[in-house]
Amino acid sequence: MEIIKTIPVFFYKEESDNEPVREWLLELSHDDRKIIGRDIRIIQMDWPIGYPLVSPLGNGLWEIRSRLDNRISRVLFVFHDGSIVLLHGFIKKTQKTPKNDLVLAIKRAKKL
Image (cartoon, rainbow, N blue to C red):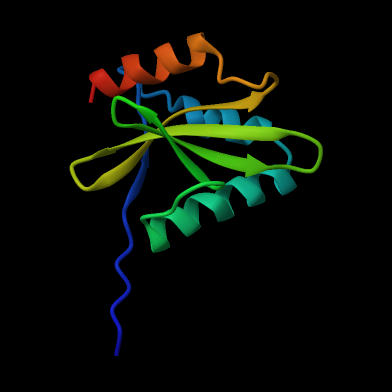
């Protein structure tokens, strides 16, 4: 019998106990949450995964690239103590990942 190794996934938690990625996900439609959740689950079960679902951003930062019905979402994450920590999520509106989104994710990663 084959043992499937699942990587634990956690939401980044601020000192105030807010979980920004969880809060962002709850603002999305049920269908969008389902697509993003499926993509996170694929990474959790089948890591390592490459393009087009996952892309490295440098500094240990990765992005989950989810295709929603008429939009594209990104969830930025890092590996920390053998787990995936979801740092920041957003709907992508430009070709390149906005610098302020990267800076925010890196800032959160440094607090882990």
